[in-house]
Length: 173
Image (cartoon, rainbow, N blue to C red; front, side):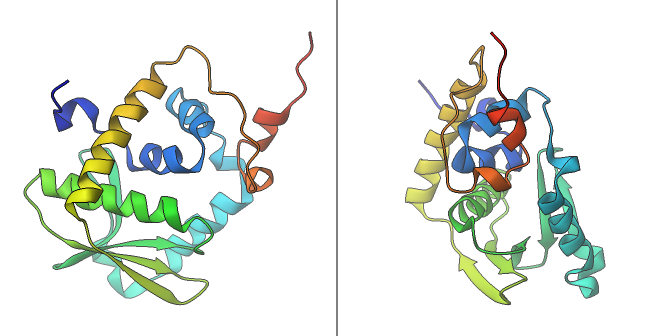
């Protein structure tokens, strides 16, 4: 199958959720949004609001209604995270943003800023990353076609997830 980016592009949140939990990705994609009532999500929003106040004119730039770049600067883009507990999905989300911008003819560097840890990690998009992103986008499109959500996977961070109660509620037969 020939790859056409416009046929596969998704929201940055969905791309991130692919690496966190396929069930969460599916639920979110079907409009089941549990984030608003979650304390951890609210804490992240507060962090975004107060972090890098001196960059107010460069914060939260929405591109094509799909990706929201936390800080867009001349040479790079920054993704602001509270902690590095989900660093693999954070990194992949930022790589997706770099890839997305590259598809638009914009070449940038990426930086992950972990506020709580006062740590910065540079992220550079490689050809291998681009190939992986294209494969993941195809897999996401496939997951979103499922009639029902993927089965619950017991992951170490489930109890802190906004969807925890949804996934682990007892069903009545």
